[in-house]
Length: 267
Image (cartoon, helix red, strand yellow):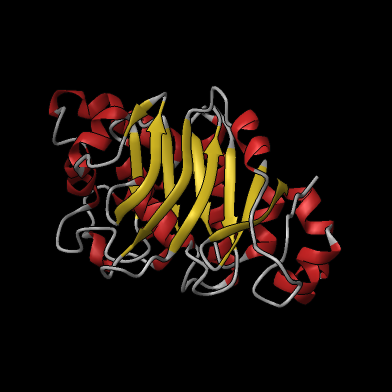
């Protein structure tokens, strides 16, 4: 069931958060976990304020919430793109704080940013080669894996990535992030800017990736669709956890519906 302590930004009174003891118990043995994280872009100003998160092996976990809640900041902090002021981020018990992007990729973390996630002047094949620059000899093996997930890539192999549709670009970005065989794939707003049909394709792709055994963490504005496909989800508000639970629980939680989902939950 979804869990809330105190209030949220909409005035229930008290403070926002998920019980720390429950988080510590649930996160025990998790693949990737975030504990009491504070982080931000401007010195002295935190976007995340004591945030907790975890994803287990093989899970698909969503992160939703209002604009400015810290969703993308949490994802970027996991990939070392935002300064961690306090707290801890670990992968299989190993700290990720202070690691560079290439080190995180080597450790098994893949990341697909919301924008500028392909090399538009390169072909699809060259884009995927860039994703495997640390292990170029494994390219054909990983290309076969990528095309087994996304058969359309074979037809697009020699096409310049900048000429692709939005949905095709997102497919290339996901495939490139998978070339280094990540244990967990971080997706930042993968459906942003796409038509409803292409949005649906992106969610199908995310689920397909997850079924191969890759853990997936997805930040999404399309809260309803995200909750439909994820195993669990977190609702962030003002840089803290407001609610967490299974996708189904959150879809039907009256507090979450009233404060965050609105009519989306019943559409």
